[in-house]
Length: 142
Image (cartoon, rainbow, N blue to C red; front, side, top):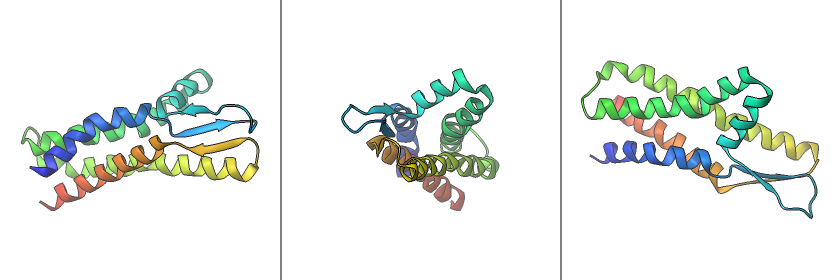
């Protein structure tokens, strides 16, 4: 029962995490920082590089959500448990964007241009992805 509730709560928490500020960035220390979320990042990518925008959209939005929906279908016996290996793969693909965000932070801080701060959305998004991995791990063991 708790597994079902945790997984269903991810269906609500993922979209909130996508809209939450991951980073706050600015060029000069005296001006306000602009907030960057998963959704604003994907929006800006669509105008600059469509292929990269498609890749990021898949890994950051589609993969984790499909995985969560797939697990919900399995939990409510609307899909076969044979889907679990594919769902686990989706979860691993979704974790790639956390790595990329961490890499961007390290690079931006290493260059020393401007100011970069992590936002609460980064922690929420990371927690959602890790919780999703945990739910799929426990589901696979049952």
